[in-house]
Length: 258
Length: 248
Image (cartoon, rainbow over all chains, first blue to last red):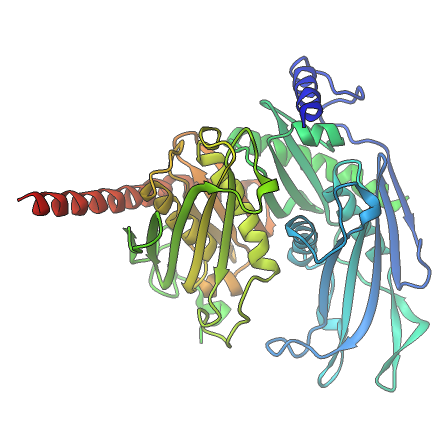
């Protein structure tokens, strides 16, 4: 706790002097690495890394009953698992508020942008495709949100729609790639003192008083937001963050293509 | 049943409001519960939310205590009978856990938590009847409950929502506008600092849309804040009258 406080003061002082611990600019991401098809047994998968943070996303289809109010639409669900091997403070157990928040913000971006054509996931009366997006946090070295959103988008880009026959999914036989209408990524900003930075490293997250995540879609559109943490955000700060997020959208979308 | 095309026609919303009208009633009553340290009931449109505060009190479980400040425990939850649809499930779900988390962050900002180290302040928000915008109603009520409990704050957080239906930016969405419309932007503002303490959003919005929504909400937050202050004034006038009655 005392060490945390020392580190926090150090980071805050550095940021005030216009520097980050690892020498990056305030709006620079760490190197991004995308590995699609990491789990060939899943219908889609992607291991996304920002710096040393690693999030694996697996996409699986199942046949399921539709929701009563949307009988002709497929179902899409996002879940996040904070694997205990990823961080000393992660413990096995039911999802906590952090993992629920992470999954719901990623979900919100994808849903708002209508990235998936859920109408195309109808199979027959009372049966639709369910698409499960599972986010596995494997190594927590800061900025889980953006890494998870990249992993999800990467996995969806990698997803193939399976063949459906005799009321069942035929595994390993595919109709073709999943159609996606957009690119959805997130840019998370942390506020340290009065400065805003992107892609915080762990020590920077400790020094941060709050975060704003902006989910973006192609064409300079915001598709999800989430403010988290104690700090408030002023209108001019919000404005600047939207501009930066639109700019970062291009960089992150490019990283996904590779 | 309201359909999407009925939501906004000829400059009027389906319930007769203009784009910038808040729902009526917007009535807040402070001190509605006997046992809680502070409480408030809000009726905002068809929403009814009860908020109550306990603390600062001993932290449970103990190891969560922070030697530098009070920890805030916020619980937003919807009663299973609160919606127009089927009976909901009792207890927290993923949505309410997420909302509880961001509500907690709002109060961590507003409350002078450094004044109460090693303690816990519980803020409970129970949605009894829901009609869209329940989280902002709940936080608006909880702010009054905190003040009613005598807990020092930088200012009263004010909850607002706005969203787009077609091309129109509408203030204070109800259930139909939220469900059938194109976006929802629940926001909590701290009027004194002009800061945004809660910002969640779904939909597809340009930078201009977001700023239009904020303009609308910041402008109308003053009115909601006045309702909060009035609730507190009414509460203490009542207490004063009671005390004078007892002394007479």
